[in-house]
Length: 168
Image (cartoon, rainbow, N blue to C red; front, top):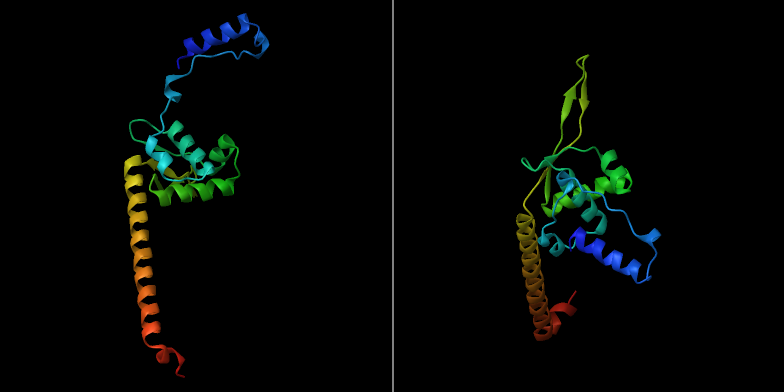
């Protein structure tokens, strides 16, 4: 739905006196550099909502050419309304999901002292993360099937040879 359509519907609701004009939001022209899309595949990964929010923030501030950004944990926490520890935990979730990579950085000040810099995050294609997610699920299903086969074999063995389990 476009902004023009939303404004038209709001004017119509005010004209019908279903809402008052004081509740109509004012729309500002959005900066095109702040526009981003979330890949549909993200919803298949079962991310916790807080990790989803951190991922969306990283997408918002990424350099569209290099797919990188380097905010501090404190900046991410302030912008998303989370604590720094929650941000760190969610960055770890995104790394495990294969949605981002992270490189530690350092810098030297004017006196030549080495300091820790902000991490450099690279946003990876979502399809890679989805493929990894499905591979992990398939591997888990194979492990579960093997466990069931072994359990059935053990039950059969115990049923066929009851004396084997009762001997000291």
